[in-house]
Image 1 (cartoon, rainbow, N blue to C red):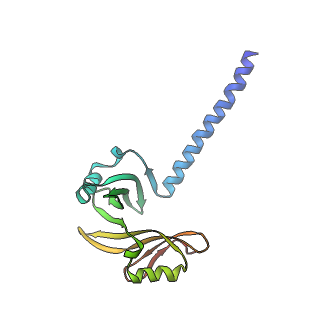
Image 2: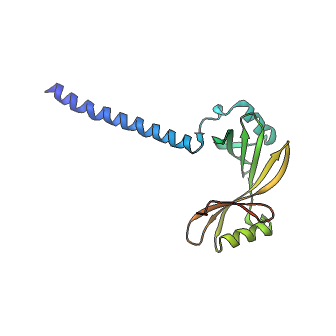
Image 3: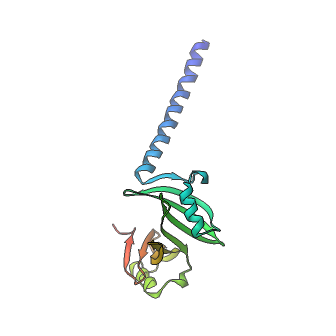
Length: 175
């Protein structure tokens, strides 16, 4: 009798353990397929050359979270941080070169051409978050555009990237 009870108790535990392991493996495979290899991990796991680049550019950066991502053949460390109570984000290549960085700005700081392009693309939308994107080319900072998260009139969240002249570069809301 005891053997029978023990057998019936152990079997469900083994099944549960297999299910948990399988779910974890599927989540890791999905994250890797989407280009996210590592997210919200310990800061010690960020390569020293990447940390050195971040601290050289932004010495007072307080890292909030980070992720290791692949864009094609390029490995980037996407690091979100605060600097003097302002939100920033930096994409740093695995060799330590800064690809680009972003700084949160207020809606009233958007250039008119960018604001008009966003309003034309999504009338009556609410601007939720705006990041000014600065590309780093040969060590020089160059304004690349603006990443804008909007809540549309039909209550959908979309993200657009707009060049300084008002040209829409990317639109997550397009079919």
